[in-house]
Length: 373
Image 1 (cartoon, rainbow, N blue to C red):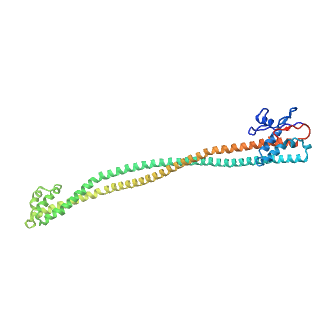
Image 2 (image 1 turned 90 degrees about the vertical axis):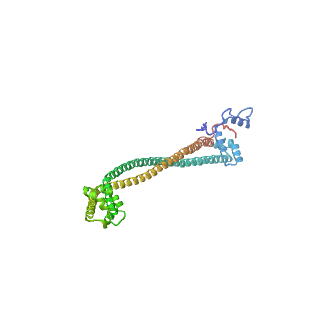
């Protein structure tokens, strides 16, 4: 009975030489046909020839021997083979199975490598996703810190404004008190430094001391008689004074002390308000210090958050570049896997199919000559 030659499923393997092709021409040249009758070339043998030629682990001389014996072994129907032909067919079958095993091993290795590549690709993609999420979180945190820093800045500005108002209020409120205190200090100093010296009456510079008292006397309400008597009484030494002079000095001392007492009363009256404004200014100053400390802390937080966002952005850039660069590796791995799988499938369908067809063919039709055998 007749049989059909297995076909290839991929152009990656060399096709059986077509009529008129160079390889076919070489094969024809290597085995000249008899002038009387040209033998028909069975393309089924070509699959076995190519399989043997792929058995690189088999020594070259052994491959040549097997190629030379193809037509005698596989060209003879299985039910007509001698023992030596059967042995030869088995040897050819072992070589074909060896090549098949090598292709199977190569296909499995590429498949395993592709699994590893896929796992690596998945890891890189997960890293990119994680870096993207980290950048989003870091950016959100930086924006929150920036918003908080702006709020703190506004709080500091408000605290500065409050302090400015409190200090201005303190300054304006303290003016009357300061005037009273300065006046009281001037009278107290004038009494001790000038009036007491005049009363003592021992100094040779009583006129100068009286002159120094003139600015203070201008602030007193003295009757005209006392005012007129003061120059004479104040510039006399104690031994020169009479009862009238003593009365004048006593009245002047009384006026001076009453003035100091009046100023003390005014000071006591103005002091609570001054203390309150001073306390308000101190409180505003403390609030400003707290706000300023908060701004410094907020600035540090913002700086750290900004740095973290930049680091997250750099990390995403790095992981993205790594993932994109690995795509070429992954593409190559999948291509190698597919090519090896296709080569294995083609070998099974065509080369092994040709061998099994020839190996199992029984007597029914003339056997064609193996091409290139």
